[in-house]
Image (tube, rainbow, N blue to C red; front, side, top):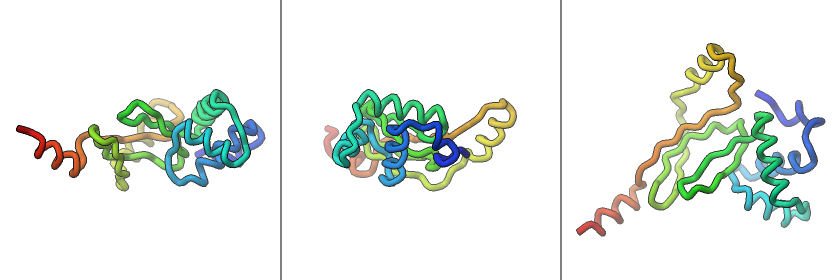
Length: 139
């Protein structure tokens, strides 16, 4: 897996700042949240630069993106495979610790000669509170 230190000389200032921010946050962030945090840290970067930098980090295998049910994207490090149970009603995402597809990822990478940086696995449905609320709202 690629590391930021191995690519450090090829990263722009904004890419380094964003990667560092993603490392420190410990959770996926939206581009807007990244923009705001950089601004709060007195490291102002334009929103368009944030989006360009995130895309470059993805292409370099250092960041990954995941779409939320509301259509917004969150970004995190590729070292954190993402596996979630996501509620379609409230948008809550619960991480799933076990990954049943690591061996498939390795096999596909070898057989297709494809450089795989990360994978995502997501299940969609209703969380317990939303299920209970919808059942009590039904006539």
